[in-house]
Length: 561
Image 1 (tube, one colour):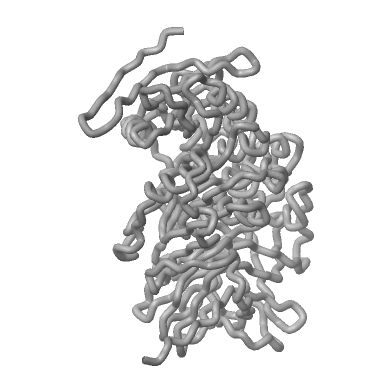
Image 2 (tube, helix red, strand yellow):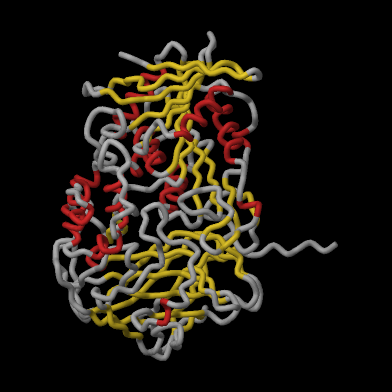
């Protein structure tokens, strides 16, 4: 084995050794490439492992490695199987558990290691931590999973049966040994192509994983083999879970924390961020200087406690720390969801004309009486839009939906202006009674906070594909005209809405291109070239109430001086 080594020194810092392309053996005979930065000396060091499909030799990894080595850690960045200089062919997720286990235990046996390994990283780099953790390698002692998705059929690439077209561009970008340039492709044309199964051809590739995903529309053995959340409850490791309110895979962080919170030393940190954490601005919104925190210091404190066993009190820190948008301040909490939350039903009401923001749709906390239903026309050839750039790196954000709410294929329900500030902090859910003339449709809902100036601020959203209304394990098509009950998870938010603001709910049948267009034929998902128009009816009367369930946090009175 040839290893290129480099010794770096600074006058005020201990010498640091960099070793490139260290081959780490896997159980099947493959070797994966790792770059290792570690202190020089006789003392054994704890190990921080980062496993990535995005090039282990990137400049930021080199800088991070030097910083951690100067603190007394060995910092290891490994190309996952099939990427960079590692052996094999890359296929998302399927080998990450075994490869992670083998890498951790190999690192623990090295003569410069103290046998204690931690992992960190975000997105796919968070995913690989979960897959390794559920294998329970003895030497793994702590994790920092950041913007980590849940099981892959719960959000990315599939959410309640609806596929995320942007995952096509992600697959294309990681389809070779090195990152592929997809900037010259018309991604919106790719996402719009029918049949969707063959959209990869517009990217000049045949993407095996994409076609496999569409070949497995239900949660079958294929998806079960890639799941980790059911096993996560049995993992007893300190974890610092981090995400943002506008992270498009936020649900992974909140669910993973909820699964593990009964275990000791679980922490949750959620900021006003997108998929890239620790930013002050997102879209047109500026969340203020406090939105940026010293994450490096948090990481250092976490690993010092669990890898070096420094008694720094990290185990006594508040379990939950959330950023309250609107007030733009951080707050420590004892649990998530917050223990004092009141879940308030905001019922849908109208006189049958809730189409567009100019319609008569209302949200009201009084239970409905007799109320005519609302109807709209859903055409997959002209799907209701979701505001987002086409890149996979950030799907949507704190966007203004005023313009798209002019359309008549969306039902818009708004509360009266608030007489006093209201804090909404926690999970959002929609209960919907609806019927369709089609055999399969989507119901896509969106929760918004409308400022007095009319800015319709997206908080979060959700979708359900009707054929999966009874669960992901089976497809049951609709009986046209029959009223069905749908439960739609809209993930979470945390915001204080000021006096004069209004709460709003949108109901549509597409959210394109966040989710693929339901062609509404009832045919095989992703494999048809033509769709059909459907007429949708949403009910909100006493016998069939529809409502938005809102987590309202009672406000603590300001102490008198």
